[in-house]
Length: 147
Image 1 (cartoon, helix red, strand yellow):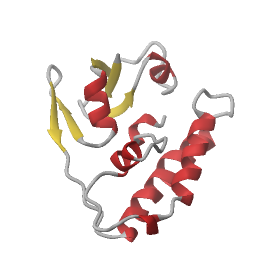
Image 2 (cartoon, one colour):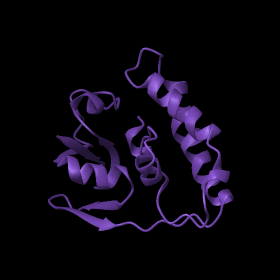
Image 3 (cartoon, one colour):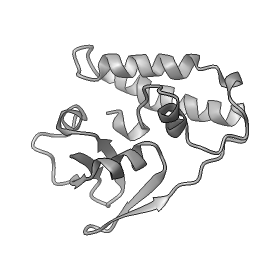
Image 4 (tube, one colour):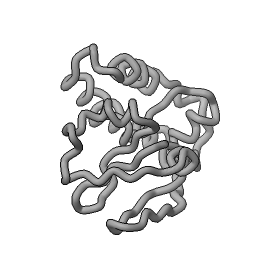
């Protein structure tokens, strides 16, 4: 079972592939009433994780919508990489101990993104970075998987 975690305003806050990943998200234990955890299928999770689908939630029903991506050039993709590195990975690595269950994985993912050779890509790139990684057997994390 996979999970979508919504804020109290029903906006998507985090995603988790399984119970272990849910536990690694550093959510209050027990999970605070300000979060709403919804169980989803592994297939739906992979669609969200690859950024193929966006999610909306009205408090009762989860709706999935197709996502369209376009990175017109390497600078645009680099901006996305910078948000992954600085907004997500660095924040996680700064605020967590090396003993955290995801610490080494996120550190490795940060290095992967930081050193990725964008010259190997053809632009415009009309798929998400996450789908590219999935298609090319690169270990990746959706930004919402990073605590």
